Every structure is written in C-alpha cells, then in structure tokens.
Length: 440
Image 1: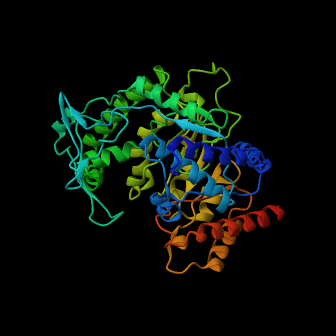
Image 2: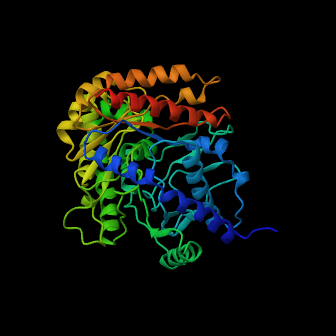
Image 3: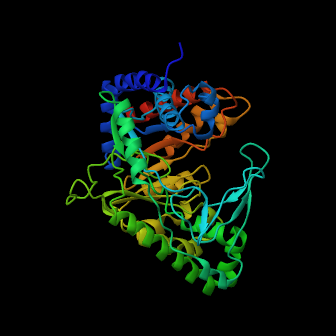
C-alpha cells in the first residue's frame, strides 16, 4: 500500500514530537541561554552538513510527491537524522515553520519579466531573491560541474548605470500563504506547533550585492582608483536596502529569532535579552531581533580600507538590532578592535578557519561569543583522521581557555560519501569540550 503524503508527514511528526520532549532538549536549551548571555558553559558544538546532506539523506529517500509537503518532509527527516546521529548541542523542538509565499517568478524590469534560461544554465543573479532586486541584475553562468564555480556579467559598468538602480520591493501572496499555513495546521494538528516565520535576509550582505553589481575585481580597483564613485554607490545601496527593510518592519513581516533559531553564520538564538522589554507580542521590530553582518567579498582589504568602505555602510543596519553577529568565512582577527569599538550590541563574532585563533582569543576573551568555524577539510579528506581532528580541537580549546566558545562545523560540501564522519567528529568534539569544561 502506498502511503499518501499526509500520512507520511504525520508519522514523521510523531517521531519529532517524541524527541522534542526528552530532558536533554531542555538541558541544551538552558545552556544556549547561558552561552548567549556570556555565562560560562562547556564549549557548545553544532554541525551543519550543508551540501553534504545529499550524501547523508539523498533526495531519493523522500516519499512525498507534493512539492510543498516534500519540503516539510525533508526538514523533518533531517531533524530526526541529526538527533539520531550527530549528538551535538542542537535543540530539537516541536516547531514547524511555514514561510510567506512571495513572487520569485522571473525578474522584472518595468513591465517586462525576464525568465531564467534553464537550458543554458544562465540566469539573473537576483531572480530568486525575496524582493524585486535592484532594477538591474547580473547574468550568472553556472559551471558544468556539480557545485562548480560560476561567473557573472556585472551590469554597473559606468557611473551613469547607478541611475538604473531601484529600491527593492516584495510582493507577497497572502492568500497562498494562508492556504499553506492552514494546510500545515491541519496535517500536524496535535503534533507540532505551526508558526508563520520568514527570514527575509540571512546577512545584510551589502558588499556582496555591490560585488555582483560592479564585479568583485572592479570593486577592489574602485576603492583605490575612484573612492569618490564607490562611496556614493555604497551609500545609495545602503539607503535603498534600508527602505526595503523598513517596509518589512512597518508591514509586520519581521519574525523573532531569539529562540531555537539559527543566527549569524552559526549558533542558536536563545536569548532572554530579546525581544525588547516593550515588545507588544505581535509587531516585531529591528531591536527585537539578532542582526548579522559579514563581508566575505572584502577579505583582501586592509583593516583601514575595510573600515572605510565596508563597516561604515554596515553600521546603519547593525546598530538597529538588539544583538548582532558579525563575520562568516572571512578572517577578522586583524580588525576585531575596530568591530568592538564601532558595532553596538555586538555579541557573536565568527572566527573562520583562516583567522588567527590566538589573536582572536586574546581580543574576544569572555566579552563576546567566540564562534569558531573548524576547518571542514577534515570531513572532506580522502581519509578521515580522528587523531588529527582531536589534536586540532584540543589545541583550539587550549588557545581559547577563558573564552565563550562555540564550535560550528559548517561549509561541509562533502563527507566523501562517509556519513559516519559527522558522528565521529561530533563525538570527539563533545569529549574534548567536556574535558575542557572539567579543567575550568
């Protein structure tokens, strides 16, 4: 007998609901509250398989036929897989988040809609954005290799092209959103808490936008050869993006992220400091949320140039949020003092595999969350070396003694088709974290 989609989802939801009430979930939740409040805990461990999910839980294992329900199935199966295999500090709860339905059907220029060219793997970079984009788009040409690099043709070639930029806007289909929400509530009734939640942005990513619009190499040259062009361009993007985000806030479209929510480039959002004390329980504002900034495209800049051309145009975003995170893959060790001095409510800072760990520890101490991103090559290597992983983690734990440390394994694009590597990595990390905690 072939099960229908609703039966499949309810069976998965029953398992999730059973796991969600286990005592360890609340224990982990309390650790994250303390951790995010800069109170000492053991170093916390999180695993994000990212592109490795295709090797851990192939799409062929999914059973639902309806595309919407198949997405919910994927989420529930991944949650159960993580709970069974990873043994990290992720909290598995009984929430199911349903997002808004918004227009992504092509990219609009005036009344003209340009559709992606799927046959040639060429598309406009912001076609799938949750807004209409900047009025111009970069044509992206994908690699023929799976997960290969891509290239793009940037549209801002002359200063006059800045006049083509338009304020992004979002078109929401409220009726379709309500249908999805009601369908989820019907399917998961009595099992999961269904919530309408939308993450309109992960990072404020202004440098990334400009890199696509201008070209990353030309962006770098402009900062040296023509700063009088770069500054007005960045300011224009800043003001336009703020106008879009202000509209989201005014329309009540922001969602809290201070519970079991991924924030920044890793870490969970549990916080008693958010939302703000005057939150009305309905209308979420900037200051009720975690905010995130990063500028991976600007990794080649000196600290002074980074401060002038990057951070200066992130501050008007970051200062609006209740708590902020900064950084992702870019090393920040030589500009931490600038971040600490200029960014209000800064709480979580990414220490990437390319950052100087000791310098970062000496700067952050126990005043900020040291969000360490271990090198994912240990997971992707031809041979997995548990002793090398243990030595690497132990060394970092020694360097960061006295810091508020979290270990976030991410950018794991392959596990070389050995899913057990994640479980072994998590086991080693937890053993070493407990060993470090017992030494305090």
